[in-house]
Image 1: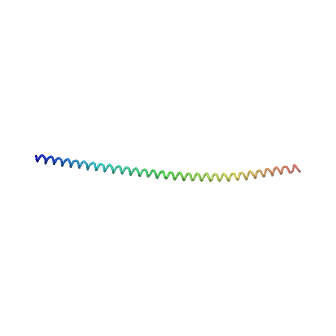
Image 2: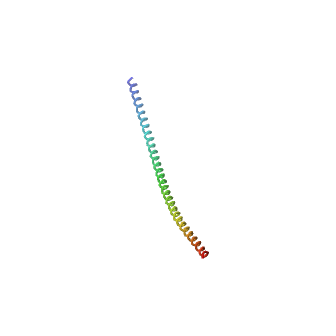
Length: 111
């Protein structure tokens, strides 16, 4: 009976050792899976940061383009205003010349 008890104790020890080894194996698997998830998350964060940087650069480029377009529109508007002033001057000049021509044409008829 003592031999039977020793055999059962030895079997129990083996069972405990096997259980501990299995537990250690599961711990190692869990640690590896966790490390893989962390690595994947880090890669995703890095990719996201890259996308954010690209978006920020594109937005800055778009803002610069808008400013350049606004400056061009402003320059064209200034040129247009100057051209309108020049046209008005020419109209006044032509009107004055026509009035002078009309007045000169009426003078000899009156004389």
